[in-house]
Image (cartoon, rainbow over all chains, first blue to last red; front, side, top):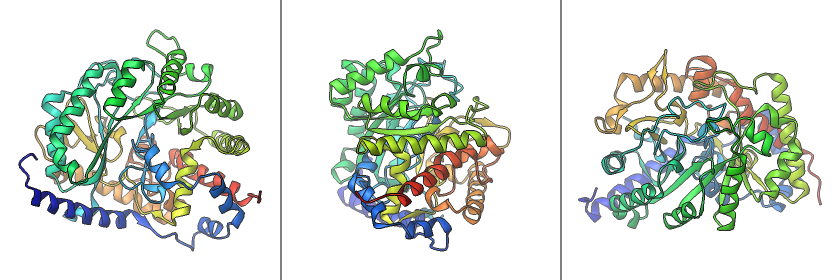
Length: 103
Length: 381
């Protein structure tokens, strides 16, 4: 690693960015509106959105940072299980559902 | 090989030591009484090289010291680790790669020296605490049978006195389910603002769970609902991970096609001896009848790329992918889950090529149901 040139760094970073974008596309999807759960979400009232907003519950960045270690879930019982991907943005690198089970 | 189907590695779990000073009744780690220690000088530079020579690395790496009690090692271990990480990756970090460290700890050993260590090495802290004293102590005990609550709370209070942010993980066992108000009050009053519930699972050497059965699922649903109500009444001082994650997805209009525990090399887990695995960290160093060891090799002998070409890895991937596909076809919660986790599928069904688990219901389905019910009944202020 120490011998890598600056140009190589730029190249690998670009490659990494492409990889991350394609990975993001591979793991994220639009809601499937044919799904009964999604239809419930579609029908949610403005009050529901206001409830989340009012209480600061739509905080992608905070969520991503708080659970950066794997969301505390990757290991079930007592570990750090469950981490970042599901958090709707900002969390791709640092997770949903990582973690540790019974810890 | 299609690299876009792998990685990027966002979480690197390193077992700094296998030893734990507790002997929790629900723990699944078989080596927790042995003191295997990760050899920093020999293994950490090599591990970082394995990652950054591979095509699987990404722009943000969280290194998590865990899988044993990381604080049973001296603080100097993490000073040394930080120095090695800095030395090995300075160039990458200058170019914008973010590398951060985390520990998940039972908090019993946290004192001012540890707080100094966390601060000077910028280590993010997660603690494991199950709730009020008798709930916590019913499972989280020292080897002599004494509960660890007093020591854990002393550690947590030290973190608070030092203004060190932390999140908490509570393993929910049957004892806690009937006391959601008391659980809520405990976490609120202890200043714990970021909380995740890990429902006790059947895993590894922990072959049964107090949370199995439809009645427990109903109780958990009720628990989350009442916990939400308490939290709402106080203006939501506690971020509950289970709800935040779902709300984040709803707000962002994004759903999952897979998750990092079923996507190869999204997570890399390395035990104290240098053996590594991917998918969920609970598979690390576990030996099973069907798959043998889930380990893909040792960092000393095998590159991450080479490991993907082995029959053992390809078999894991085939079974994992097949199980995910069936989940996607059968489960309406798929978008919030991304296909479940291999360890739960294996421990509950004996194969990674499986679909719904008890763990799915606790970790995805019930939180989604409770949240939607709450949102659907939301009234304007």
